[in-house]
Image 1: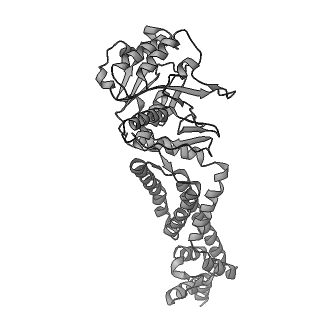
Image 2: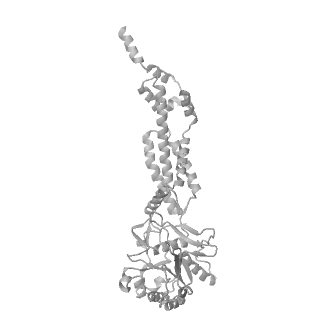
Image 3: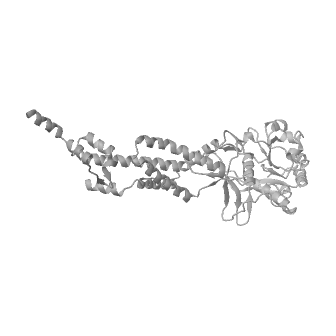
Length: 432
């Protein structure tokens, strides 16, 4: 056992524990055990981060409770939307996008189509039936006069929070942009016809991906959205036309009984309205601030330096220092993640790095417990348990590369505490 212990101490440096911990953390990736924890970390970071400023080019016109109280139940008659577009025509908005479906034909479609054609920059929504996959498109009367169409697919994670936006739906035959991207396409086209540069460079479709997604960078609590106006107030002429001039206007349902609730890290109870999802995507497109994250291989590689450095820093350190590190490291890591989220729009993983650190600390504790057990078994044959424990506590002074270092002091201590020496000495003195 002495030979095995010597070989172990000489050939197992501390960084091996950190490397093993990193491999263990990576091994659970296929099981997706980190995913729910990372989602919780995502929510936590957004709640800590100061809110961003909404792009002032975006306006939301909501069909709210006051609108329904005046006009009746949703869906509103199509002539109400005709009145809205006629009211907006005096404001000269850039583009108007409807986060509403106009699938079924109605007798009022002709007048609505005329108002759309008069404005010239109306983008209509389309989507697909969730169970059958059948397309839900604007009816032919309205589709022919729409400046563009945008899909309004809204996907949620298992915890109900929306974190990704499907900016393009692609097939070999077509590519359909998300509503906000479709609105900017119209504005870019108008600028091109006037010889002006585009409003913003848009991400192109990639037909190799059926669902082309981006990570949403939530601007802030939607209840603080600065340029929100009631549908009723706009139609009634109570809103100054100048505040709507040159704006990208989204029209959607914002009443309390919304059938398309949106949960964000900042709006969970109660949830908010789905139209703010499109407002956020529009903001991210205009300001190029979608979130990015490390690729999977990058996240895995990140765990190795965390595990190795933790092992090197904490090996042969007293327990209180390890306890301090266990509390300080998560705070420091969250601080770094928060800084990168705010300044670089980078979503840095939180759960797997902290988990790797904890695995490393646990591994160090287990390793040292095993080492102590082996040393105690070795020395208790020659010295008392108390002295063996002293040797363990000062092991760095006794061992180097697995070799026992003998000095005059340690040799004397060992000799004077040979098991039974004290009792033998007392008996000799007594007999004398």
